[in-house]
Image 1 (cartoon, rainbow, N blue to C red):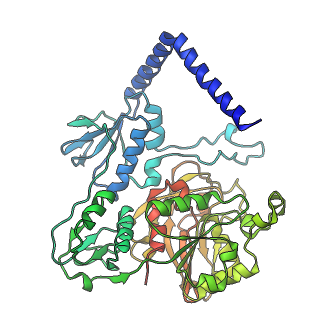
Image 2: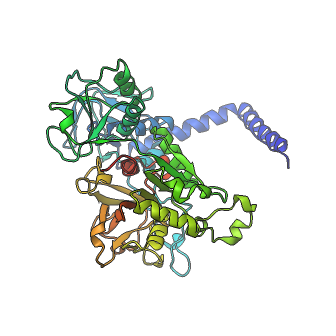
Image 3: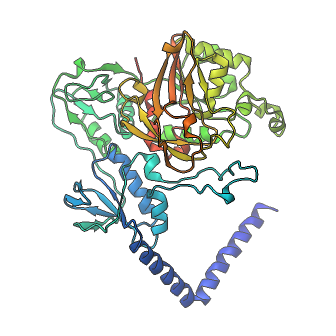
Length: 497
């Protein structure tokens, strides 16, 4: 089979589809009409009549990204032009409504509605162990993007307009001679900060909520930079609000950190690719590091090293059968020298960010005082394949949680970690970033054995020598889609001292 043969087969299939459609035009159109009209009627008579999306979101710019995803799927979305009240909730002008009375009501229900994966004879093996879905047991984009969406049982009656174009707000700039504040609750605030760094602007970060700013906000001095702020506000949607006090007395100066992203060979690592894509989207500069770059002398150039989520055997290079498929020069693995270099990097003041499963490597190799409590547990006892789990953030006690809401959702995949601090004299070195709720943890998907993770840590930062190791437990940036947890990674890439 040659590439040309594949192209010819694709051409034949495409032309055959067009030929059949042309010869059976009336039947195709009638079937399309029947399908869309029946789905619209079904949605109209469903218990849930619509999903409302309030304008006052924790991160309204991320809400706009979600709206654009819905529009890209051909879903009809309405926007309110005035305040209204519906089912005892007050909504501000600019809120969105997605009616179920439309042809793609089934897709709407799956993307915005709370869903539970079936647990029955068909999803269990003969021995009672659960069968793994391909990867996800829920695809509710609102949950893992951190957007507040509410199902309503009555059709919304308000002054509504159909959204016809992509949504993109332009940030406002308040006139000021003192300085400006950028709210740290926006993911796009980090894009704005990176653009300010590019322009050589001094940026400070707030550690205490006072003087009209919150912990995690960014402040900058008044700028005589022409169109700089206007361009950033237009590109990112971030607003620059006026400060009421001298910015030099608020927070601490921060700087752009030198970031390295580990990239192994052995056919590459999908999670590394998504991490790379995400950093590029939010304007974080970084270097790609291969095994040969993990030397003690070279790592001294960096402030933060990111280790994407990975299979432990492949990360260590101990999967010999898999490695044998590749020439020796394209094999990979963190051996003793690379591990010692990473250990010394952290002890000398560096920050090592271990995403998802990669945390197990740091726990084992650096003898960290934490354990992954779900490691080795039978799937009959604990099981959560691609599920949305409820958690709370330590957004005042850990700088990695700055800008996060009080509560949110963790997208938990089968191989992810859950942390518990070991009882020893080094407990004080461990600081939680976020914790699972103590009960009713499942938001959407499939969860067995919630008692195994109730009130335990989603992620932690561990002091190791002069530096720290960040164990996220989950893949914060999974497929560059989990906007609700991006900021934890972004905070790790901004100066924290």
